[in-house]
Amino acid sequence: MAINENAVTDTLTPTTGTLNIVGNVTTPNSVNSVNTFSFKNRLINGSMQIDQRNSGSSQSIGLTSVYTIDRWYAQSTGIATTGQRISGSNGFEYSYQITGALTNTATLFGQKIESYNCYDLAGLTVTLSAYIAASALTSITWTAYYPTAVDNYASRTQIATGTFTINSTSTQYSVNISLPSNVVNGLQIEFTSGALTSGTITYTGIQLEKGNIATTFDYRNYGTELFFCQRYYEIGSYYCQAANSPGGVVGSTFAYKATKRSAPTVVGTATAGGFTANSFTTQTTQSFDFYGGPNGNGQIYGNWTSTAEL
Image 1 (spheres, helix red, strand yellow):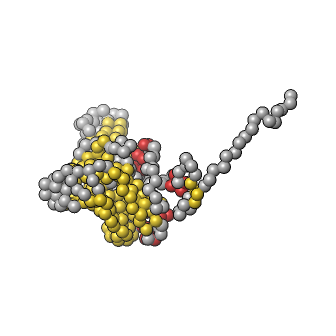
Image 2 (cartoon, rainbow, N blue to C red; image 1 turned 30 degrees about the vertical axis):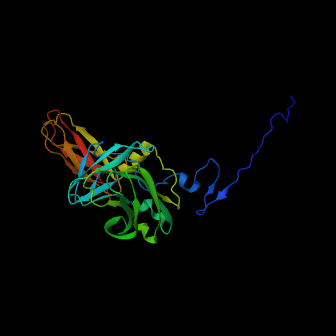
Image 3 (cartoon, helix red, strand yellow; image 1 turned 90 degrees about the vertical axis):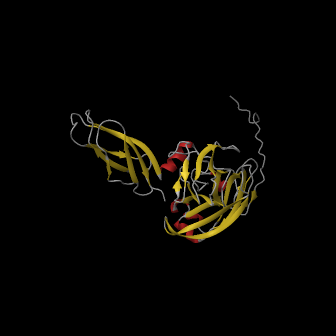
């Protein structure tokens, strides 16, 4: 059988490429090649999707810094404010909202980045971007810090700070930050406001990436983002049963879904069942042991939280 070599004609259309200042080749219908894959956004849960602690319920934010939705902590001075995950905008399913109180004097919202996740940023320019809205305030201050010791934020040094002029419509703001070599120790990003005596501040779509351009938000698979969060905080339930041992002590070992950043603090809550309070021991980065006095059926069960935040 003869083959007609002219049956198919391939036409190759050249594409013109341009080289930008951070060495990324961009072409029509393409995206920034350096920032497209893997871990472009070094902030975890920047779209406010994961909320293991509160499941959308509100929490009080006072003088002591508290973790709110996963990976993000908040603080207020003067008087406590209220924080809650709410519906988002600009293509984001969720936002985090802080609601003011009459004698409040300042608010703070931030995240500490583990050294493993920013080591390669040392000495580079990065871009911080965020969608922010405030119903009563006109400015939000951003600040970047690095810790004095690796992943130890007890002592920190300011890298840079600045102000976004904002309004009541959720709008993206961005800034370039030149990072020093010290960010091999970690990196901390905080947003602060003046007195929030009324109205609200909302945050979403917060991103920190290599280069001096704010690119599209790094939407990660929900399961991947949850797994990232569980390295620092995880919730779950435990159950153990030993046959014919209603009067003794039973226990077991529970493995986490994600290896923790460090050996965490595990706190358990017993559910109804007529057994004694449980103990949680031998907490490693991968598992914990638990034991307790069982009920009449030889069971112990309940819920637990595991915390290894920076």
